[in-house]
Amino acid sequence: MTTTSTKRTTKNSKRRFNDDQVKSLETTFEAESRPELRLKQNLANKLGLQPRQVAIWFQNKRARSKSKQIEHEYSMLKSNYDRLELQFEAMRKENQNLLIKVQRLRSMADENNCEKNKKQSLCMPSCSDKNKNFDYLELETDVLNEDKTVEGCTIASPKNGSSFDSCTFLDNTGSSPQWWGF
DNA sequence: TTGTGTTTTATTGCCTCC
DNA sequence: GGAGGCAATAAAACACAA
Image (cartoon, rainbow, N blue to C red):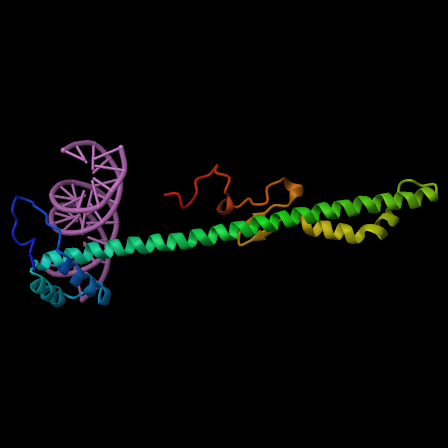
């Protein structure tokens, strides 16, 4: 085994650990990421390194490991977010289509009612007639037009504008910085 | 070969724990 | 107060395209 770190050829020279050293350090790290002093000293003796070097290697390794873990967690969260975003968009479109259907049915019913009233010499329906015939439609559209609050996020209905999401978490318009864009 | 980006080793300064 | 950990950073070593 070639020891690269114990002899310094020039001032502040830095040598990478050889494959055997790294392999041994990696193996130990897998078993114990924060080894106690005695283990680090034994490892240093075995590998021909200074205990300080071994300690620093574990410190750096923990930092690298943590950063990789964060990267992994980020990609998981991102894919979950993307999936939810697609689901949300599909539901939003479905909701829009249903609202359009409700509007059409309502218009048809209005026309139908008008025809009936024409036969009775009254083009405009009376309030009582209207209530009698369309209560169910109004109830349905009221339900659809209500603003929804889901986990603190207001889902605005079309009557209040075209935006369905007032929550910045779901804002993907590009006008606000993406939370993952670091 | 060289410029540039990435990885690895090492240092520094601060914080926490005993 | 000393030991050890962590974050930030420096700097050497390495990889690689042009």
